[in-house]
Length: 196
Image 1 (cartoon, rainbow, N blue to C red):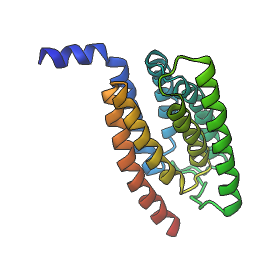
Image 2 (image 1 turned 60 degrees about the vertical axis):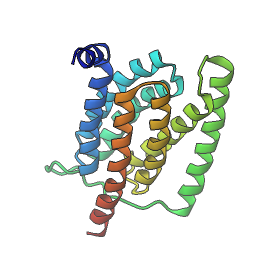
Image 3 (image 1 turned 30 degrees about the horizontal axis):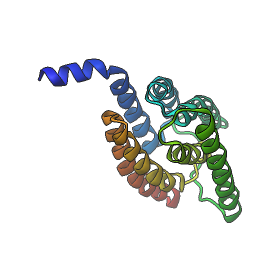
């Protein structure tokens, strides 16, 4: 019990970030607009966590999340009626967008990995860059309510989970396992609402 108490005390920032992220994930799954302020708060916690863990690309991704949370909040509320649910509908990705986003992902992965290799002491520069590039694309898709963002998150979250286990960020690894499971469920739920 003492070990657990000491671990919680030493890792309270990571645990807080993980709990806030779970609230964000729940709201995202339910398409509740409050996902954006919780996403913003989660990003602030994880900027700190990733900086001190040497995940520099993921830290930069959190800075991106701060701005995309503001963008997403605005985009989901523009044209909103008096209800809690925004008018923005779930859509599917078209072929042109898929090609463009695949190109953007590849370019971001290349650039970020090169920056990490040449300018940081990152122990996992290529994989850190991969999850960061994927996160940028998937979050933009979420802000636009594109259904397939959930599928991209399944892959990113599972890779991230392995990275966090490697760096002994156990609460975050568990969080990303939960993210993966909820991403599968989220895809099904959003697909159902799209059919309605």
